[in-house]
Image (cartoon, rainbow, N blue to C red; front, side, top):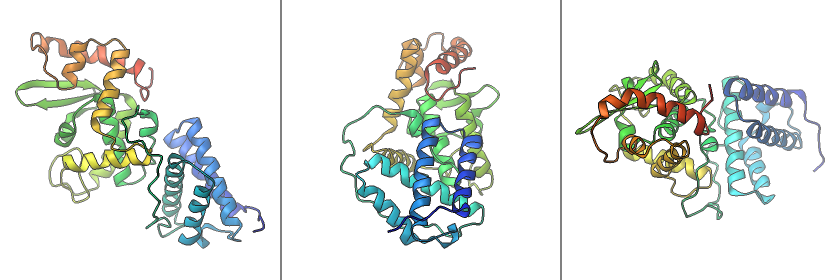
Length: 302
């Protein structure tokens, strides 16, 4: 097929979307470069079909592009990133009233053979690199960010209420049966993710004051949270990603920052000596916040 030039009606929306990602979402430079490469390749591909405007694009050409990129011996991880990139771009085009349908709806990708079946180190930066622009994606990013920045259990995530997040103290309050409440500091980036989720949550009719809800308005169940973690893992080429792996990643960061084991154990909900717990909590917030900011990959040093 002859190669045709990518016109302005194709290229300009791509550039505006990339500017949006850079200014509003502040993506990492490497991620932005990958998105730029993928979207420009998409532009050249559809131009070869003599398509001059995104409104002319159909699901058949979109899926042909994904298949073509797969045939170029791309890894399962790269293909997953490509699909995520295109989904985010098409969502942007729908918000701009340029597209009115989801061109990737029903896309079936073959199960990648390169997915690891063994626990792997979790890249928190990549895990939270989600195009959060709707109810589900914004909720999932906030949910994952809270687990990664506090090490709490899935059951505790499900039990969180709106008042559990203290924005003034930049902390998360967890109520545990037969134990004093635990206050865990969380990073600025995690608070921003939760605030973004609040925008969508407040617009949804909720049945109870749960922090994380389904579209039905009911509290998100433990099983549903586990499924969301697992689904994100598959997008990254990690089979059976679990909350325990995210909790381990959190504790490893604090150990590297030389936070004492008793404090880490208490925050992970493990059995520790109760002597002096109440008196230590205020100082623990400051200690862990400082340690977290210096150690956690998503934290911003102040």
